[in-house]
Length: 378
Image 1 (cartoon, rainbow, N blue to C red):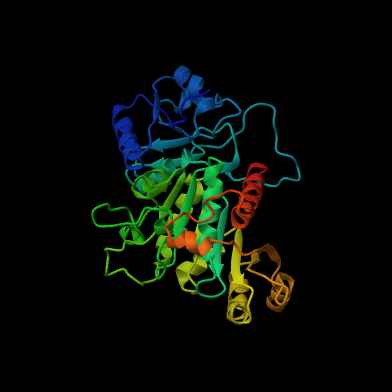
Image 2 (image 1 turned 90 degrees about the vertical axis):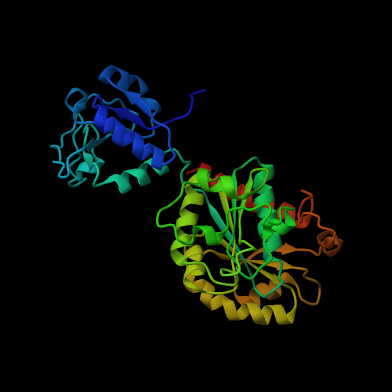
C-alpha cells in the first residue's frame, strides 16, 4: 500500500523552498521535495499536487507522466509571466471540442501559475484541500415542529455511518437546541472545553477538517460540532452564514459523510446549509398539530432545496403516514413506528438508536448506505 500522499515540490531554489515550506506549514500539510527532474518523475504519480519552481521547469516540460496531476508553476516574482501553452505527443483536440483554456491542457508545466508572496493565501487554500477526500454527501434533518425528533434522527444517521467505520461530521446548527453531545455522553463544560461554533465565527479562511476535528467531541468516528454552553454571548444567536459555509465546505472535503441538525428557522446560515445538502429530511409526528405546523415550513423549504423528503414518526391507523405525506405534498421517505422505551432510555442517559435493529437505526443505515454508495459510484 502507498504511504501518505503529499504535495510534491520540485525545485533546487532554497529561497523558494523556504517560502513553500511556510505555505505548507500554514496549511498544516506535509510535503515531499524533489531537487532533480529524476526524483520528481519517480514521485509524480503518487502526488495529489505538483508544484514546480522556474529553475527546474525547463527540464520538465512535456515530461510529466500520465496519469498524474497537472503541475503548477510557482515563482517569487510579483508579476509571473504565463508560460506558452502547448500539448505533447500526437494528441490533438478534436474539431468539435472548441478552444480549451490553458488550465485544461496537460503537458504544460506552469499552465497554472502563482507568485509569492502575492498569491500566498491562494496557495495555502490549495495546499489545505489537496490531501482531503473529495466531496462527502450531506444529509440535513429538520423538525416539522419543536420536539419532533429531528435531533434523534441526526444522531441515528451519524451513528450508522460510524458503525460502518466512516469518518462522520455531525454539525449541530440549532443554537436553541440542547446539543447532540448530551445524547452521546460528552456534555461540554468549562473543565473539558471543546471547539464550538463561537470559536469559529471570526475565522476568515477555511480550516481543514482534519485540524478542526481535533478540538471536537468524538464518539468513535463521529466528530460533533455544537455550541459552547459556557459562551453566554453566543447563546441563542444564529450562525454567521460565512461560518456555516466555511465549516460545511471543510467537512465535505475532509469527512466521509456530513449530518446537519437544522434549526426551525430560515436565517442566511440555515439557507446556506439547505442549499449545500444532498438530502433534506423533515421529521413530522403523525398528529394533526404537527402536520399543521409542518405545513407552514414546506413552502420555504422547497424554495431552498429540491431534495426534501418526509419522515413520519408514530403513525397509526387513524393518521397513517400516507395521509401525512399527502397533506404536506412531500414524498414519504420513511414511516417509523413508535419505539417502546425510547423516552425511558433518553431519561436514563442512553444513546438513542444505539441498537442497530431499532426502527430508527435501521432506517438510518439505509439512508447512509444509499448516500455513500452513490458517492462511491461517482
